[in-house]
Image (cartoon, rainbow, N blue to C red):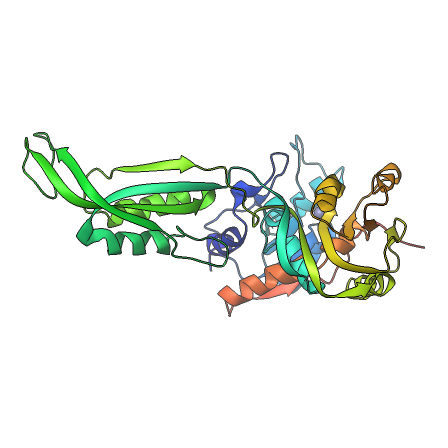
Length: 364
Ligand SMILES: [Zn+2]
C-alpha cells in the first residue's frame, strides 16, 4: 500500500482545497510513494502518539490537528513540535493532517458529531461561498449519452441526495475546420452544421478538474466547446458548523445529560436554560463561537461548541443556550469517522485508533 492511496481516500472525503487559509492540512511528513503498513489515528499528533505508532509498528499517523502550523526554522528538540517531527522522521513515520477541510464537509467532524446525537435534517450552519459551478458542453446528439455518463462518473451533476442531474437541450452547432485541423465530422475549409445537444451540469468546484478531463476524454471533437460558469447558489453541504433537529423534543436537562453521556463529559459550561425543551441543535466541534449568530439565525435552541470565553457567553443574550463542552471532547470522536472511512476502503489495512488521551486540559 502506498501512502498516496490512503491520502486519495481521505481527500475524497475532505478535499484539501476546502481548508481555511490559516490551516496547514495535508501530508506534513513523508512522501506519497512511501509504502505504508498501517496507521494510528489521533486527534492530535504528539510525541506520545508517535511512540504509540512505534510500539504498534506502523509508519503513519493521521491526525485532525496539524502538528506544524507555522514555519519551523531549526530542529533541535527545544519544543514539542520539533521533538514530535524529529521523532517521526527518525523512525520513518509519516504524518498526515486533515483539519479544517474535514470541518468544512457535512460528512466530516460536525456531521459525525451530529450523528452521535441523532440529529436529522442536518445542514451546514455557515455555507462556504463559491463552491458550485456549472459546466455547459455541446456534443453531437449520438454521443450525448457517453459524455453524460463520463461526466457523472467523475462527480458532475450531484445535488444533495441526487446524482446524475443534468439539463439537456437539442440545437445546431456550426464550425469550419482549417487546414491543420483533423475534424471528426465535416470537411476542412467548409462550414459544417451538426445536430448537437447542450448539456448543463452543476459541479462542486473541487471536482471540476476531474469532470472536465473526463468530458474531454469522452467527447469526439478535437476542440470541445464548453463553458464553466460560477454560480452564486448557496450550498448547505460545505461550510462551518451544522444544525439539525432531534427526532423528538427533549427536556433541556435531559438533553444536556445525553451530551454528557455521549461525550463522556464531567462538566458542561452553559448559559441560562431558557426553554423547558430543545428540538433544534447547532453544533461546531472545536472553537466555533464565531458561528453564534448563524446558530441564532438557524433557529437553534442550543449551540454546542468549545473554547467559549467569558464575555462570549454574554453574547448568547437569551436567544439560545450556548454550551461549551471542551475542544478535545467535542472532536474526540473524529478518529472513529476516519477509521471507518479507511476500513471501508481497505479491508486489509491496519487502522488503530489511538488510545492516548492528548487533551492538554485537565479537570480537578
Ligand atoms: Zn479542533
